[in-house]
Image 1 (spheres, rainbow, N blue to C red):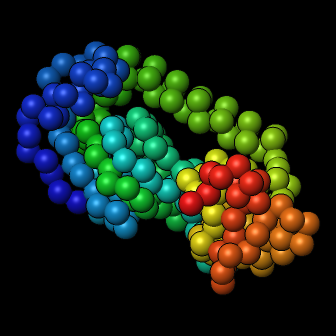
Image 2 (image 1 turned 120 degrees about the vertical axis):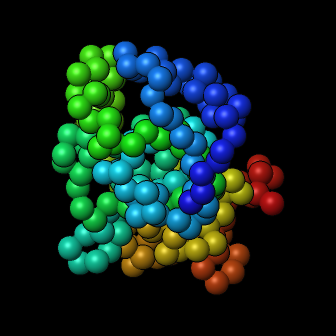
Length: 215
């Protein structure tokens, strides 16, 4: 993690995403930080320390289950806010945000501003709206469960630029399935001709080959 001390770039992000409009309080001490691929955002700069408006980059948000295995909560890109639960004093444990592509975040220190923001009506309304959106998204995901086969095909079609899996363990992680489950589905789909095995642990979507969209 590093702080970007570029006032013009910080102002660019503040205006682009209208961040000041989320607050009644003026002259807030915004700072701009950058996180490199592989860094854990919440470890190098915990939510209890600073609230974050993600303005650039991609990261995976996951939790570690009781058996030690990771469970993917969300693959995040685009603008977003982090720190609502910490602000409410309910930051969960065993949650991690791992940077996939360089992340930039406009941040505010939490504790020095807590009392001020607890009386900032516009920010509190923003906080409620953010949490309601997440709850709605979570309910939608749980009510729209896919079979392992459907999830794998969707992953290949929409999450893999070349419609190819080259790492079974990584694919299983992103779909919240075990490696054994995904290997079983890969075998079944290969036998039915929906996938083609092109190497050890490498599978390509057959329809992609027919359409010429796999490189």
